[in-house]
Length: 124
Image 1 (cartoon, rainbow, N blue to C red):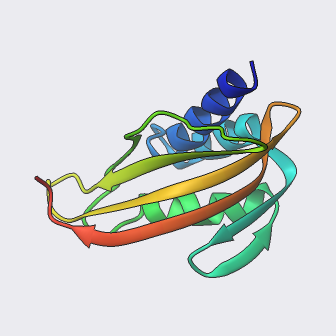
Image 2 (image 1 turned 180 degrees about the vertical axis):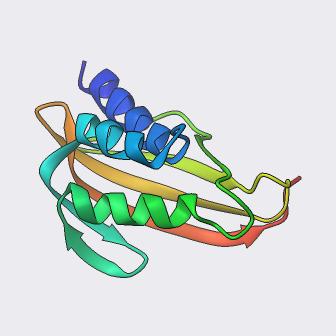
């Protein structure tokens, strides 16, 4: 059951990157994250849904276009933390960013998140 909750929260989080409009991002994130989420991203530690929203909106505003963010692995939950791999591809099929995130859940929502972004790679 915990694995299903983790997968649901993760997929909801990733759907914010692919939302039809910036206004929809906040709604999707508030369904996936606790209000006091702790986010460890490329620029360090931040807290709250608003901090994660800024990160998501920055990615959505990629110079090549909004692109697509997908989960490209199963969710692995070896204990209290779940991990998964993701890939962000630009709309023109150009370079992509890949990485692994590790998340912790509280009440079926992500309350802690660590983003490990990898190198930008050309699309296959």
